[in-house]
Image (cartoon, rainbow, N blue to C red; front, side, top):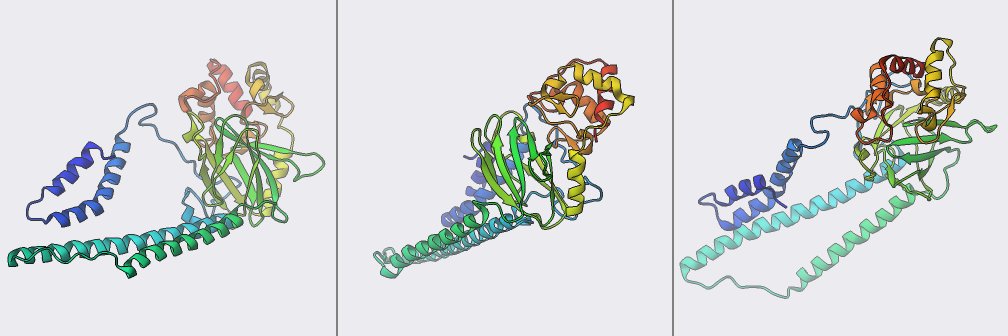
Length: 390
């Protein structure tokens, strides 16, 4: 559908004097989609409503020390850094190439037909001759536009089947790291159930750390509604469905931060359900895993903050080893080791954490954490306590 601005622009093009009608039709065909795209983009930028004027901060990379060498802030499927993503990229380029070739051929034939028959009609009219001879039932043409599309569909079908087999494995690759992914409104829970052995399980939230060069096998579930885990540079999107476990896999080829986004509308804060995957060298991953499996830090200097946290409703939702066993919100045992809060919408600093505790609805409208109406002293004590949890 064209909005008012697009109709005015295209209407102006159609009224240019001295331009043949056929050429106008061709211009409208080619320029029309571009005008619609530009005006649509402008309209989106001009839109108002809840949250208009606010911006989502994509936090700078740097967790586990040093800037990443790849993937920082890029979510394009054409920047693949993992075998499944590379297979999807190859298929995308093939489809785009075929579509571009069809577009060029069709537009070229249309242009030639418009110019050529326009000239003949004018010449025939001046000479008093009837319209040019019309041709029907051309066997070569009928055969061409039947066989060529069949060949294109056949090739695309074969390549698509091969890509699906490469991307959707039914069994984990040899030596894969197993990670359980649970989608919540609106954050991600990650569990490493058997990597450390002896029943030691690591539970973290929103920021997934994986080793470079090792396959990662994800088992995806949902705790409430349908979500979709999608980091374009690593793998295609996979839905998280309540009562069902879907699987996918990837293998990061280079260290770096890989960003993603929930790809299935899941409610008010769907757009702010961001994804962060950090790929590190195997030794660094092992070190990170051991650190995440360690008990929560107990710092006597923040005892009062710890008691406040345990005394308020925080313990009903958030788990902290030795303090609370909440199950509804992110595990905070090692909160301060993360780089962001709010599922990646804000960098983790004292100010942002304090503001989040004070009133999460101001930063993430509609999230499931209410404001506890704490006074300034209580906010400072709980913030100081949480920042010791590394």
